[in-house]
Amino acid sequence: MADRASPPCNQAQQDATSYRLAELDRDFILGDSMRGVRLQLEYAKVEERLRAWGVRSTIVVFGGSRITDTGPPHHRNWYQQARAFARIASERGGAISADGRARDNVIATGGGPGLMEAANRGAADAGAPSIGFNIALLPHEQAPNPYSTPDLTFRFQYFAIRKLHLAMRASALVIFPGGFGTLDEMFEILTLKQTGKTAPIPIVLFDEAYWRSVVNFDRLLHEDVITKEDILLFEFSSDPEDTWHRLRPRALGQPCEAPAPGGG
Image (cartoon, rainbow, N blue to C red; front, side):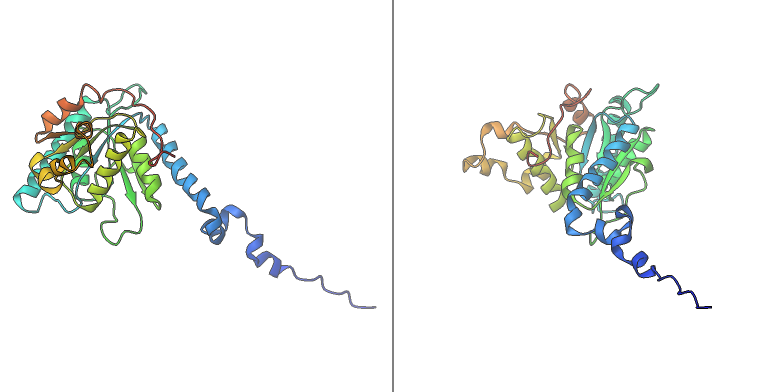
C-alpha cells in the first residue's frame, strides 16, 4: 500500500504580512500610504468622545509649561491667576451640565504641566470637566497633568489635528504668558482671525506688561506690517474676573463652526 503524501504546509502563507488583517497590520497602518487614514482617525476619535460628553464649545487656555506654582513669585502668581480664571469660567459658563444639556465653555488646554495644569486644575476646583489635548513624542513635558478629565485627556501624533480640535469648538481664547509653543498657538489663531478663516472669537492676552515686552505690537503697526484693525483682534487683561467679563458677552453659547487651521 502506497504512503499517502502529507498535505503541503501553508504556514508560510499564514505568517506572511500580506495575510494579516489590514486593521491589525501595524506596519501597514503606520506606513506612508496610510498617513491620511491616521489623520482621520485622530480627528474622529476625539470628535466622538467630545460629542459623547456633550461638549459644544470650549474656552481655550494657552500658557507656558514651565510656569509652575513652585517657581519664582511672578510665576506662582500667573499660575494662581490661570487657575482662578478657569474656575470662574467653569462655574459660570455652562461647563457643569445637568439633565443631558450641552456643555459650553469647557476649559481646554494643551494638557501638559505649568499654566495648562493650572487651567485644568481650576476647572476641577469648580467640579467641571476639562479637556487636555496632549501631543506625543515631545522631548520634554509629554505626560498629561493630573487635573484634566481622564475621559477627555487625548494624545495626538499630529500637531495639525491637535490644533484643529483646539480651534474648532473655541468660543474664546485666553493666552497667559509662555514661550515658543504659546507664541506659535497665539499667532496661528490671530492669523486665522485676521484672515477670516475662523470664527470671530474674543482673544484675551493676560498680563499686558508681559505681552508688550515680548511682542512690540506698536512697532509692527508703525512699520505697516499690521493695521489698526489687527490691533483690535485681541484685548489685554490682568485679572481673572476682568478676563471673564471681557469674554462673557461673546463667550456663551455655541460658537460658529470653524474650518481647519489653514482653511482646510
